[in-house]
Every structure is written in C-alpha cells, then in structure tokens.
Image (tube, rainbow, N blue to C red; front, side, top):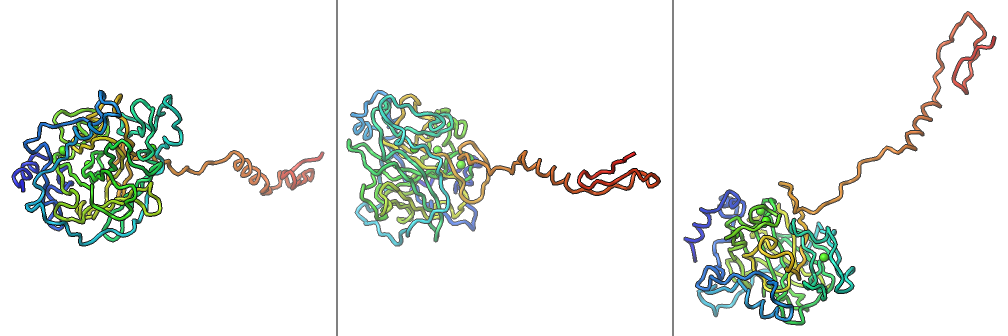
Amino acid sequence: MKTSSVVLSCLLASALLIATGCAPSPETPTVQTEIIPLANETEEGTEEGPLNTPEISPEDSPVEGEATKAVEVENLSPDPTSAIVHQTQPGNPVFTQSISSECNTGYNFSSASYRIQPPCDSWDINLLERAVSADFSQFYQYLDILSARAGLSNGWIYFGIELFGAGVPADGVDLTYFVEIDRDQNGRGDVLISATNLDLYGSDWTTTGVKAFLDLTGDVGGITAVRADSLPGADGYETMVFDDGKGDDPDLVWVRRNPDRFNQVEFAIKTDLLNRDVNFMWWVGALRGGFDPQVFDLVDSQDSASFFEIDTTCGLVYGREEAYNIKKCYVAPIPTPTVHVQSQQATAEATEEVCVQPPHPDPQNNCWIWFPEECEWICFN
Ligand SMILES: [Ca+2]
Ligand SMILES: [Ca+2]
Ligand SMILES: [Ca+2]
Ligand SMILES: [Ca+2]
C-alpha cells in the first residue's frame, strides 16, 4: 500500500479534504484504508489522454478508447489469483427523489441538421446534452438520459439512470455510466462511481466493470467549480478505492439494469463510501469512448467543439442542503398566491353590501328618510 503517498495527499489537501474522508472524525467509520494506484502513479504514468480527441473519427473510436484508457491498474491484490468473495448485495432500489428536467434528445433528434438547443446543453456550467456524434449524424439512445433518481434504504444508496433506450455500442467503443457525489455540495465532485460496458441483459447486481474513485487533492472542478476553466496539473479523481470488487470491501459498489426495464441502469453503494454521511449533492452521466476519471471536470479538460457522445445532468441535493451553487437543478418555486382582480372586486362589492346605518343627520328636521338599499339618508324638502 502506498501509505506515504496517501499521507502526502492528505497533507497537501485543503480543508475540503476533511469532508472527503481524508481525516474522518473518530466516530465516523471509513472504508478507504486501501488506495489502489492509478496508471499515472506507475511507470506508465506519462499516459494522459483527453477523451474523444477531435482528430479521431467515430470509426476510430475503439482504438482511441484503448489508447486513452487511463485507469489501467497494476498489483491490485497481493494474490491476483484470489477470488473475490461477496458477503452481501443490494436489494431492490428505493428511490425518493428524481431529476426529471433532463432534455430528451432522442425525441427531438431528426437528422444531421439537428442542433442541441440551450439550455439543454450548457457547457459553461458543466451540463452536457450530447448523446450524438460530433457531426450530429448519429444519435445514441443508450447515452440519452431522460431522468435520474436517488434513494436510501438499509445502508444502501441507490441511483437510477433512465435512458432513451437500452443498448450497447455496436462498434465496440466503451460505454460508461457514472455518478458523481459532491459531499460538501460545493459543486466539486468528491466521489465518482462508474460502470463500464454493462451487459445489455445484466439485470443481476454485479461489480464487474464497476469502479469508485475519490478526489483527495481537491482539484475536481479546476479553478472555478462547475464553470468551464482549465487548471493545469489537476488530476481529477486520482484515487481509486474500488475496482471490479477489489478494494477493502468487495461489496462497496454494484450496478445492474432494472430487470423490468433494461433502459434503466441502477447503481447501489454502501453508505460506508460516504462515511455514512447521507447529505450530499449528486448528478449522473453517460459517456461513449475512453473514460478517464483523472480529467474531471470534463468541461475543464475537453474541447467544447469536439467533445460529444456524452449526456450529464444537473445536481440534486439528497438529505440536508448545505450550500447553493449553479450545478444544482433548477426547481421551479411553488407559486405564491396571486390576488386576482376579480376577487378584489368581489371583496369591494361585499364590503359595499354591508351597510351600517349612520346616525340621523339632523333629528330636528324630519325631512330625512333612511334608504337602506342606498344605505344613505336623503332629505326631501
Ligand atoms: Ca438527455
Ligand atoms: Ca465537493
Ligand atoms: Ca471548472
Ligand atoms: Ca484530484
């Protein structure tokens, strides 16, 4: 284990890291005692690949995916032949909140002349609606997120991603679904879970292709959280804590397709991954091509003009809201009651109808006659 590097990471980290589990409080259990080194911490560390580089055509993408794959892992276990033994697995997901404002590109896509309309795709605030090829000739139903859900049950946090359609790439390109968890709700993801190349008929919970990463150096989001701006040297989610069941807890993260609806991908994580703090902001994504956790935020590392084949959502707060930022989904406020003109008139009329008879204007003069319909005294001389 790279204990020294972990300690160094903790020392270098800002106060933000306290919330990410670098220095958990004594009463808060943590699972991240084993850190799995990523590729660029090894002798192969010069490999750093942007995703979907502009000069590579979609036909070349399978090669590109291999070339840019940054999450090669070495020496994960002292005994590579030891089998992973699962002790427990999630139940049926429970969802209590939903991101339902996602744009439906599949419904609108018609041809190569199609263009994504704002505000569905807002690169500047890390909201991407690009379930199409860069030349707009292809629409990928398995990338187009329609909604996403989250919930908590029996120590598991569930996330669901509803897609326009189930599918896997016919051209062999990697397909990854992912969830980012922003524990302190500052717009910078702290935990990333991903599932790459989930089987089209994979309706049983599995850890195959599932990974979990942390950002212990606090640079996800670059200079400005959420906003697109590059930070040279940033290493994104640099710390892998779970890989295909390898890690301190082989049961930490799972994925499956909803057995009744294969277009719904479901994740389950143990609350242990969040040190059992279930107040956080979360959002999800779907990506074709090489998946590199170390280049997050993608808007900070990629080129807006050429980076396509991805769909992401806005963020939703689960549990207690700690802070506001522009990553959060816009939720229409509950309208305040409006005073209608009609009701005002009605009120005025009602007031007029209630007549309180004033005193006799002049008791010495019998010319005065009270007219209740008009609610007034009238003098007849
Ligand atoms: Ca979408
Ligand atoms: Ca954060
Ligand atoms: Ca940024
Ligand atoms: Ca980092």
